[in-house]
Image 1 (tube, rainbow, N blue to C red):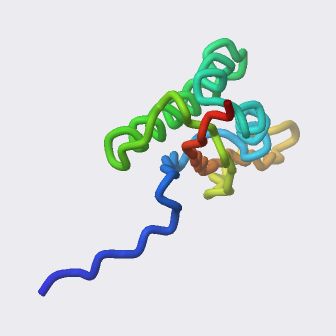
Image 2 (image 1 turned 30 degrees about the vertical axis):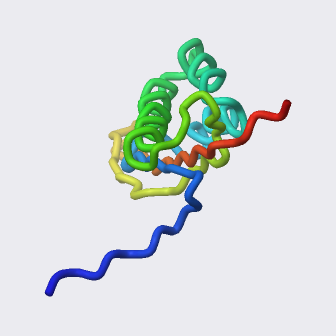
Length: 126
């Protein structure tokens, strides 16, 4: 029999890439995601390549994956792609303890986050 094919949640002119369990806080990741939101993919890749943030490298890989998904899986034109959405979600938080003075312990939280990038093909305005 087999499993039923799930309906596509995106439009026909959109493609998506999801990067899960990134070892950074959602707040820091959202600063980088805000830099590329709404921009042409070539411009967004250039901004991420020259960004001084550590997390820009995995974000750039996720954007390249979304571009490859658009080209190979959905047949979209890579020159006409725009980053329509780039949003961040919270993942788990590892809790650790660090020894402090006088026998105390300080709680250290190591947050993880998820990143979703959606690219859309737009028609060139002439």
